[in-house]
Amino acid sequence: MGELQSKGLWGQLRERKVTRVAIAYVIVGWIMMQIGEVTFEALALPSWALTLLIVLVLLGFPLALVLAWAYELTSHGIRKDPAGNIEATTDVDGYQDGAPSIAVLPFDDLSPKGNHAYFCEGMAEEILNALCKIANLRVASRVAAFQFGSKGADIHEIGRKLKVKTVLEGSVRKSGDNLRITAQLVNTSDGFHLWSRQYDRRLEDIFEIQEEIAKSIATALSVSLQQKLDHRQQQIDPKAYDFFLRGLSYFAKHTTQDNVFARQMFNQAIEIEPEFGRAWGGLAYTYGFEYMYFNASNVNLNEARRTSARALELAPNLAESYVSSGIAHCMSQDYKEAEVEFEKAIELDPKNYEAWYFFGRAKVHEGDLARALKLFDRASMVRPEDFQSVLLQAQLHTSLDQKDKAIDVTRKGIERVRAVLQMNPDDNRALNMGAFALLRLGEAEEAKEWMSQSMVNAPMDSIIQYNGACFFSLAGEVEHALDCLENCLIKVGNISREWLLHDSDMDNIRNHPRYEAIISRFPE
Picture (tube, rainbow, N blue to C red):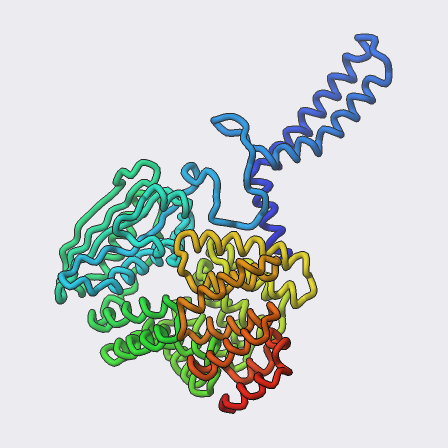
């Protein structure tokens, strides 16, 4: 992480104009000493006066740098610069005056039966992904933007919370293969429309519409969209694409049941369009997700290998194909090949959060914790509101016996968790991971509230229920932890037995008689 921090520090020095102040100070100081040398003797000043001037100039140099770091000269006068650390965050001061930025909201579903929310979300995500290709445009992530929804959203509030200057919102009316799509780009500072348009097309034209909207936004924001249209993608059967969007919608929820639904949707897309590379990539993600998080079976491993290889064959120009392949290689403990695949994904799309994040997880599995720290740090920069990549850094610092760094990173992670919960109080992943972070900071009561709430919200999610057992084991509540573990293993779902037997979070309950009784009922 030190390398990335050094780059970030140099960027901060330039951004806060500290380097300019340093250069200006040296020039002015030198001029003052030259003037003093010429005039002090003519004014009959004592000889020590020039020495005093030199000393004062030297002492003032570090003071000037400190003031330049802490304060900023603006058109409204001198103000304190709140950016107290070098890590990129969503809390960017003066965002309305900075580079172009946008949040894409899920479009409203105006279909007669109101049953096409997945299509509206999928279309918005496709446009968002196209906008992410623009190098000089900051795009709020799907995770952050989609929590607001679109209908009745307060544009000014979205701009303030996501720190974006513009918002794309719209609506979709889908009837059979007929589409009516309305999109508008809104300025978050005053609510005025910068651009709007209505499209009456057929479903088969969906790719053209998405590209048109992305290009129109780029023009309205005066940024350059350098993206080649994927003509192969335009030939995909509209029905297959519809199933693909359904799959994306389910998979984005990251629960065990929704992962099953997502797999069904991707499979149906492939049945209609056997060479639909993106659907194969989505299918590979579902097997990788299931293997890594709650069921490390040979079936999931073999299917992840097969489907990711097919995705790579059919869509070799997509970062997602290489990410799915990297995950599969990691699961097979082929870490060298996994690294090649992740690096290729990053080369194709440096803004791909999943590439950085899962590359980091692969390095954890490999045992290269120092490299994992750097990769998670980069993931946290690519997605500035993400808390997972930050809190995982805290766990790695703890494993490396760097307790002070673990506490510092945990505090940063908790800030991000609270920001997410402010927008969505029922975000179970935030509550779940945030509870562990609060426990590390000594905030035990609030930590227990968060963990308990996440378990109530998702009673059949094996990941959350298992994390509950780990949490209460760490908190020293042995019987409660055993209750959670029993509920998770017997009533909820599968957890890797190998993971369970080696998970250090379970050390406080491992020698308890109930623990032996519980895992004895768990299949080998």
